[in-house]
Length: 69
Image 1 (cartoon, rainbow, N blue to C red):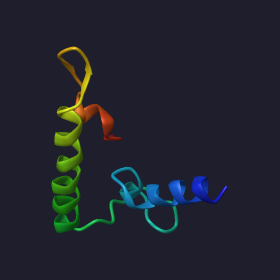
Image 2 (cartoon, one colour; image 1 turned 90 degrees about the horizontal axis):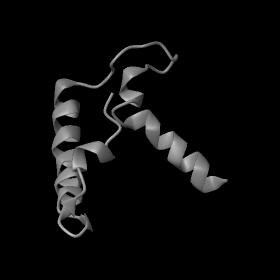
Image 3 (tube, rainbow, N blue to C red; image 1 turned 180 degrees about the vertical axis):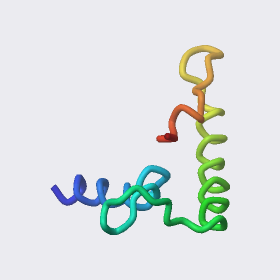
């Protein structure tokens, strides 16, 4: 249960959770710098997945591993 709860809590700080304020209202509460840093860090993961080969020469699409809205 702890793993599930921990996983769900992290959504409050990802690119989807940023869309809601503490009261649950739709409001982007990240600063421009927060957004920039998040995207820079997400790009590292995207690039890593782009290098994975699923079958033969078929590479994973790293962009599709993200929960972009």
